[in-house]
Length: 110
Figure 1 (cartoon, one colour):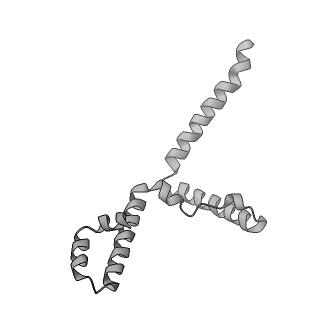
Figure 2 (tube, one colour):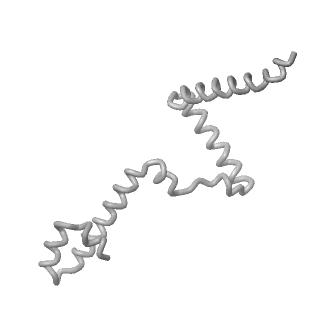
Figure 3 (tube, helix red, strand yellow):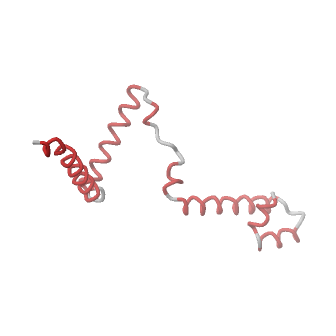
């Protein structure tokens, strides 16, 4: 009878592992994507209806998930800013040639 006192621990661990395995399998299937989208829609509806701000997602959350893409985008934005500044500055053509070869050094000095 004493062994049955710990049965709930073993069944809860087994249930959690089985649930995690099912979620890992279903997350990339059509049914899983549909279920996740419905859950997200439900959370959005609750957020809009009751004004629950703790359901709001961070707009920069994708940067945490994809740091390489975020770094590449910020690097490209820096280069675009440099090119825009250089196109507006027609008086220093010698500086423009030097800076176009090394755009990141120019940004670091600013």
